[in-house]
Length: 141
Image (tube, rainbow, N blue to C red):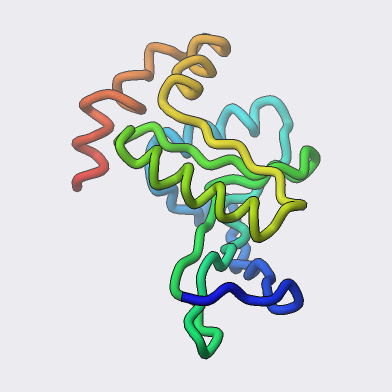
């Protein structure tokens, strides 16, 4: 694995989809998008992929696509509400992303952050289907 010079390191713009055509990876992402829409916060879903590692020929070996980009805040959000053991992997990727792309602002939201948002906005009755055992069964389908 080789690092690429700054002149070669560029995020890859993913194709934009109309809202109704977006297939969220998890119900918590759909709920997060609904909250953003309700409060008029402009967002994009997985708009960029950031290469993190390359082989000696410049082929991408590892990349990361944060879940959301908050347009007006110029901030990416990665939600990890399902399997908390993935947090370590996500944190590693975020550290690599920030090291390679220091101007990128990104926040990792874990299950507790997401549950806080549900309580804050009075939608905690959905917590079990979004972050509990019911959500785990949806993810395994």
